[in-house]
Length: 197
Image (cartoon, rainbow, N blue to C red):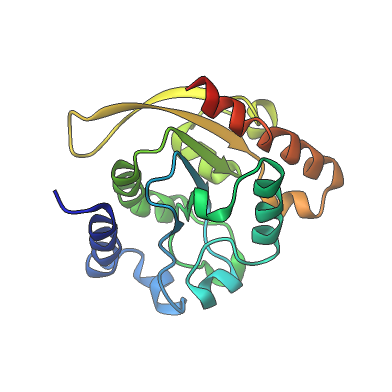
C-alpha cells in the first residue's frame, strides 16, 4: 500500500491529468490541493480557493485563514493538527461561488482525499461544502450540530462512518459579528466531539 502522501500526490496529479474544469484551471495560478496533517482526525473543507490561496497554493491563508488559525488556537489545536482543503481546487474568477458542475467535477477527488486521510470528523465551512455531504439541509438551521453519516466511496464497498460538523464559512463571519461569535461557539465543540468518538 503506497503511503498516504504518495496517494494524495497521485490524486492531485489525476486532477491535472484528467483536465478537471479546464476553464477554471486556465485562469488559476495553480491547483490548491490541501494542506496539513495527513493523519489528522479532523479535516476542514471549504468551498474554493481565493486570491491568496491561488497565489500561495495553500488553502485558507488570507483573512479567513487567520481567523481559522485563531479559532484552532482557542480549542488548543494548531494548523499542523488538522488537514484542510476545499471542494473546488482552482480559484473561481473574481472569487465567485463555485458552480454546481464545478463542485460535481471535483467531488470524486475530494472523496478520494478523504478516503486516504480517514478523518473521524469532517468540518464543513460554508453551505457549499455542507451541501456536498448533507444536501437537504440549511446551514442556518443545522450549523454546529454534529451529524453522523456513512460515506461510501467510489472504490465501491468501503463505507465508513464519520461525523460531519457544518459551520459557517469564516469569510462570512469576518464581516458579521453575530455570525462570528456563532462560529467561534460552534467551533469550540470540536474537542468534545473528538472525545466522544
